[in-house]
Amino acid sequence: MHANDAFITGIGQSEIGRKLERHPLLLTLDAVKEALGESGLTIDQIDGVSTYPGRTPGLLGFSPIGADELIDALGMKVTWYAGGGEISSQLGAVVAAAAAVRTGLARHVICYRTVYEAAAMARPEEYPVPRRDRVDSYSQWFAPFNAISAVNWTAQYAMAHVKNYGLTREQLAQIALTGRANAMLNPRALVQEPLTMEEYLSARMISSPLCLYDCDRYSDASTVLIVSAGEAVDEVSCTPVRIAAMAGSVERHSWDQAEWMACYPTGADLWTKTDYTPADVDTVQLYDGFSFQAIAWLEGLGFCAPGEGGQFIEGGQRIALDGELPLNTFGGQLGAGRLHGFGFAHEAVVQLRGQGGARQVPGDPRVAVATSGGGPLATALLLARD
Image 1: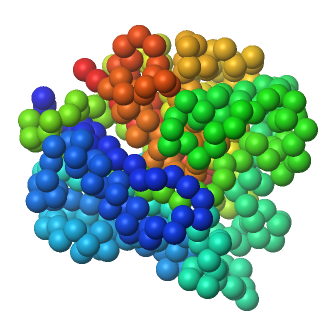
Image 2 (image 1 turned 45 degrees about the vertical axis):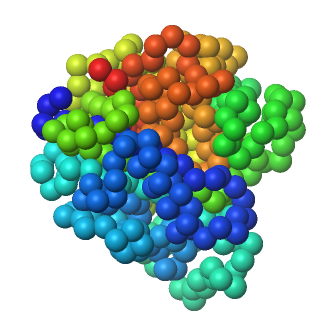
């Protein structure tokens, strides 16, 4: 192992549900315990913590547990930690951890993302939603246009593909149908019911061309990844997965939209940092908070040309579990639940270790891509078992 490499070692995940009664800190501790048990590490060996976006007092359902709270709860002695929202998207916390272990600031870093949005909505007296009498910050670019939800601006990018490249709803549906089929093979997935094309096409529209099944759903869960320095990998008992390359970018948040989402420059940049190419990739775990985002990532990463994403996934065979490029094998956020980015890296490690069970990619997958973000934010990780 190279000393300046970073590896994902332990992975863990709590129960995934809606309106869970278990406190979000306990969900986080559940995921940490699982990750430590798999890695063979003890809490005394952990000297770093990285999270996104840190505790957010005004939106405790969105991010209820900060790094300080986790460090205190576990009695950790850390030499480096970080938590913030102004990074290239959720998996930017993994990028920060990888940079820390590569530069000697830490040896083993717990990275986590905890969400509690469904429970918070069910218990507003415990998790009140802030009320504002003015619009400021980045919301000034969205609220005046009634584009309060990310589905609104994602839909505009999707509609541009409809108008400019002929993207059809039947093509778009393949992301949701594939995610749901894979979720049914994942015992932890939030949704376990099948989805048909007829049901998809008859669903109510949310923001054209995106319908109900194109949108992920609020969930309660915690996902943990342990990022370890190359020189410390001999301390773990599991199969390490190398972070072979990382990339991220940020576009303007203002309503004066860029023509292309941030995943396009991020995807292109990823391949400049490695000898691997898209042809080497065995599975992709691509952010699908809204289905079109996964299509944009396929284009941005070079699996097909810009504008050809709909044709690339038409019929669903190419991205199926037994297809040439299995997509979101755990169900993605559309099927497994809104794990907010971290679920994609978790599943990539599961697949590269051959631990997917009924949803395991056939053969011997050795290279995977995991991404997070859409619109103005994007992060991509290239993971390899080599």
